[in-house]
Every structure is written in structure tokens, then in C-alpha cells.
Length: 536
Ligand code: HEM
Image 1 (cartoon, rainbow, N blue to C red):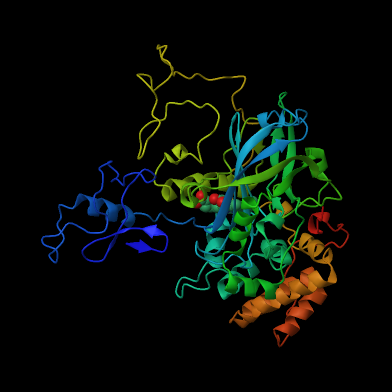
Image 2 (tube, protein in one colour; image 1 turned 30 degrees about the vertical axis):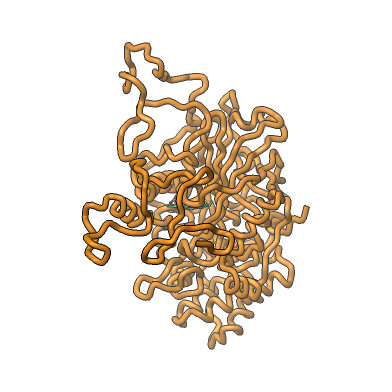
């Protein structure tokens, strides 16, 4: 029989059979058994019950039944691509990290962009933070820079992350809303967590509805350390600057795009790479030392604060190019496991309590999400440099130690018998630490409004109007009057005019008193160009 241009065979029940030939290999089971008929299960008579003996049917169905794995607890919806990072100039003065030692060095990367709150099947243009996670396959192991498109975060301490995420996701009784922040639980939590106000300003701005993944900035958010060959540490904040320029859509566009094409961002990235229009970002560093940090009005360990670029310019040190789409979404984008804990010699952590908590959380969640301790054996997660250790067994082990040796020290001269390397090996920065064991938030984390105001006043009048409209829209969906009013009480500490516009917009009966501010709010901080539009 023929269907258009296709030659097929038709079975007695009218079903379509396609048969192996020179171009098409033989279909087999997972055991490699050639399959004669994939259209009919084995039955006792053509109209009789299916037989348990049908191993082909059972294997095929069992595998299908187990296709789903848990989606990520956050950042469930994402899209990835391969590419490379090219170092402009050696950074030997500040770091011994191998990828920064040679000008022109190209390091392979895998990047995954994501939304935070929505489930795996949610739409791309939701008002939300975007993840910007980069895995560098360096010659001294994998370094993951697991960032966002906004330079600050909602909370200061990882212990609040489960509460924050519960409040942002669907409400537990009704299981909606699926992919947006416009609901009572979210606004209740943030209005009772004034530390989130700076982030709220960004999330209510156009930054939270990017036009494309290709037109987003990226930020490592936390203060990290770079450590050079002499063991000297320099603090660093990481930035990604899009060569395509920074662009957003407006809310009306976002709503329409979500309806017409919920896959808008992933399609855009796929199409750009297919067309050879490879997106690029420059990696920027803000480098500083402790003396410099001591002059800040905020704490370098506080992830709700940024360092304004007028105070500390961003030094561009290399470029990221995405030039290859994935072969298979699940194998690569879904199974990739980024972890802030994956750092290479020359890169280290700060004591930011959010970062410290993240270092635990990613590995922990991936053990469950990817089904056991061997997810590093999945090609997208494996290093591309030589690696050897004595870890073995566990579910799905593909890479046990070779031969007799699986411990050290040992007396064997086996082919694969790795040893410590005091010179090349990772050493944590020898930061002096002492202190009383306490459960207390530092007073240096207490100013929640100065940088929120700084962001708001750095926006153009149109962008400010977008922020006011976004908050008004969001609060208009909030049913509980006291939550609406509480949000406005925080806005009064940020900008009176903004508070007034929102209060009028939601027809608040009475203007609330400003929320208690722990530190006198300051008006003299300069506006940050991190907030201004980059159009290269
Ligand atoms: C994903 C935890 C804060 C960026 C995740 C995942 C967890 C998590 C459990 C899912 C990982 C997986 O299943 O593979 C946390 C905790 C945080 C925190 C506990 C705070 C205490 C942040 C911050 C950023 C961030 C501040 C940005 C700087 C990301 C990104 C992903 C992610 C980009 C998606 C990674 C991917 O594409 O696979 N986070 N997160 N997270 N997180 Fe966080």
C-alpha cells in the first residue's frame, strides 16, 4: 500500500507495518531480540486475551510506564544548549582556575535557562525569575555557575527556602495558580519577609518578562571567592552580559504570547541556533577585597544586595557562545544536574548563608530526582577531563574502579590507581573562622529598603509605571485585604509615589503606616547601572 510517498505493508486488520531494509535497521527489544511485529500483541486467537508470555509487549509497556522522573522542585521548566566559553586574557593575578589561565582557551559548556515557579509544562512568558545555569567542563573538573537573570534574591538564609518556594508555588488546597506570583500565599510570605523587597522590585519590573533567553543578563548573585596560585583570595560577583542586548516584552505582549505560543522562549533558542545565529554573552567580574567590602552599607554575604556598577565596574573576561542544540531534551536538558558545590581549584565560596544552604540542597535533590548516586555517569553530567576515584556500586553504576584496587592507601601498582595531588588538588581557602554557635541574623543584613529604592529610582518613568502596574495587577488578585495593605506599607519605605499609585490602583480605603524599617532608609546611594539597559 502507499500513503502519499510512503510504501507500507498492510496487515489483515488494516494496520500499518513498516519493514526493515537497507536504510532502516531491524527494530529490537532492549535485549537486542529482533522484533517481527510491533503492531500486535501476542494473543490466544486473533480476538482472544493477550498472553503473559508476550515479553516484547511487557518490556515495551513497562519501560513506558517508568518514563517520568520527578520534575525539579524549582526551575522545573527549562531549556538547554551546548556551547563554549572563551577566555579573553589570563586571570592568573586573581585565580588559579585552569579555564582562566590562557588567552583564547575554549572550555565546553552546557547552559540551561529556566523559570522558577512554574511546573514543567507551564508557559514561558510567566512573570518570574529566570535561571541561568552554566556548567563549564574545565580541564580540572566541572564548575557550575548556577545563577539567575536577577542579581539579588528573595531571602537571606537558606532555611527560609522551603517556605519561600511553598508560598510561590500552587496553593496546597486548590493547586493553583500554576506559574505566576499573583496570589495570597506569595504576597503574604513576602510581605512578612521584608528582606524580599529589593527582589520584589526586580520581579515586578520588565526584567521578569524577558523577550528571549538570548536577551537576558545573568548573575551568580552570591559573593564568591577567586584564589590565585599564591593562595590569595579576591571576592567576586559574576555577571553575564548578553551581546544581543537586554530586552523585555510588556505585560500585554507576555499575556498574548503565553496564549499563542507557550513555548516561545524555547522555540526562539532552538530556532536561533538552527539558523546559525549563535547567542553570546560576556562573562563579567566585579572583583574586590575585604577592605573595599568593609566600606559597603551592606554585607557582602547578603544575597539581597548588589554592588552598584558605578562603585565597582564589571571587568569583562571572556565570552560564552551557544552553538549547538541538544540531540535529546530528556537526556541532556532534563538530566543535567547543576550544583553550586561544583567548584574547581581557584574558585571558592563565601560564607553567604544562602549559598552555604544551596551547596547542600542541589546534591540532595538530585539524588532523588535522578534516582541515586550515579547521576554523574550520565554524559551531560560527566567531566570531560580525566577523572579517577574509588567510588563504586549504587544503582546504575557504569564506572566502577577497574581491577582489584578500590581503596587507598594500597600496595598495588594497578593500571588505574589514583593518588592525591597536593599541588594540583583542590584546597579550600584558609579563611580564619571562629565564633559562638548561635542562631541569629546579623544586624548587617537588616536594611531591606535602600537598594529596593535605588532600583526603583534608577528606572525610566515608563519602567516605573510598569512596576506600579504590575504590583497593582498582582495585588488586585490578592483576596485578603490585610495582605494588600501590608505590601503597601513596605512600598512606603521604598517610594511614596509608588505606594500611592498602587494604593489608588487597588482602591485601598486607608493608607497604612510605613512598615517598621530596621535601619534609617538612605537616599544617597547611587543608582546602579546593573539596572540600566545594556545595548551593545
Ligand atoms: C534549581 C535549591 C537559591 C538558581 C534548584 C533546585 C533546587 C534549588 C533544589 C533543583 C535542582 C535540581 O533538581 O537539579 C535552592 C535553594 C536556594 C536556591 C535551597 C536557596 C537557599 C537559588 C539562587 C539561585 C538559584 C539564589 C540563583 C543565583 C537555580 C537555578 C536552578 C535551580 C538556575 C535550575 C538549575 C537547572 O537548570 O537545572 N535550586 N536554590 N537558586 N536554582 Fe536554586
